[in-house]
Length: 287
Ligand code: AMP
Image 1 (cartoon, rainbow, N blue to C red):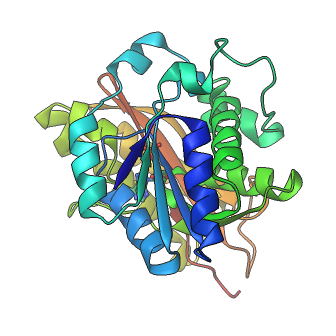
Image 2: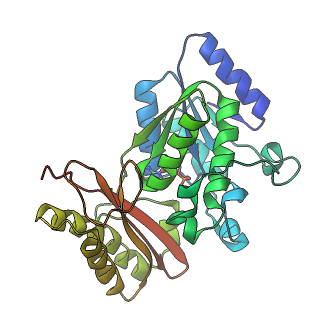
């Protein structure tokens, strides 16, 4: 496995792989690799011949300097994990490699969806995400890329950027990997106190309850949202940020869930200093 810090070197390595007839698989991460990241890498390995994993804590997507500084970093663990998972190249640039003149003046505008839900709670977040992802896509070049459904709004915005701005990239969404108690794996989970960790599965419980209510015939999105908010609100260690039910394609928020239209429930809440998000694709009802 090669660890590359320079964008030009990565471009050469990816070009060389394509020259050998290999498909390039790309997984963008902020490091502190866990089994959620590993699932993306496994999927990439099953589909493609040359696997690039980027590890870069992107300052543009943090709205708080404190959050950026406190974001977990584990370079040795990450390199060992990537090697064990059969990654060909880890791209681990310094900030100055990607942003030599500081934050770029030209950025990607995520459009209206970028200002809603997670984007409303974290202003500028999705512009920061799409800007770094666009840069990484340009460096890696023609490839298939793997993003987690855990960050469903991010996945949708990446897909829209690729489609609307004609990137030569194939985007593959991968299912959320969870701990045994349902908590979605996240680098942020390590920051939870034992009590907060014990409380955090309430997010997945709320989402699962929404799915149960839908299966039982409840079609009113407000009822599903109110139920999720009530459940999370009843957990003393959780501070609800938002709940939503969106159409999985348009991301509009319907009042009633129509037949045959896939919908997704989304939640975000704080546990002490740590903000967690989760979501679940709801069962599609035929009537
Ligand atoms: P991050 O390092 O948190 O920016 O995540 C890098 C990629 O891993 C993103 O595409 C995430 O959606 C994905 N990811 C993070 N956690 C999980 C998880 N629990 N299951 C599946 N994918 C995940």
